[in-house]
Length: 81
Image (cartoon, rainbow, N blue to C red; front, side):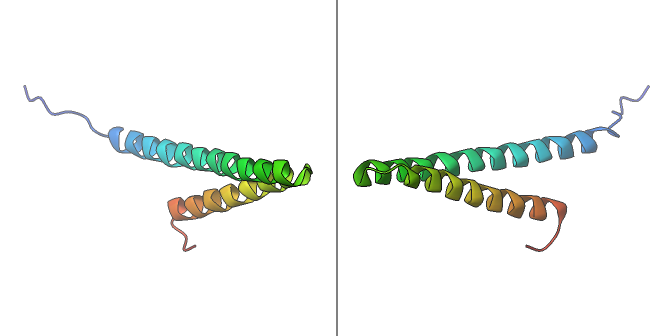
């Protein structure tokens, strides 16, 4: 008897793990950009004694994170950015 493994499903599983790694990393990038820019906005808010820089910082972080996420999705799907 031969001991040949059946590797038909392993290629698909590797692609699923690759997609999971890419999108979880992109989600982490989105979260970190929101936290960093929110923190910078909060620091400006404390310096200027107004509340709006915190909101602007979080929104700017959200936009930067979504831009990075869309860039990764385009690269993952094979489109030119």
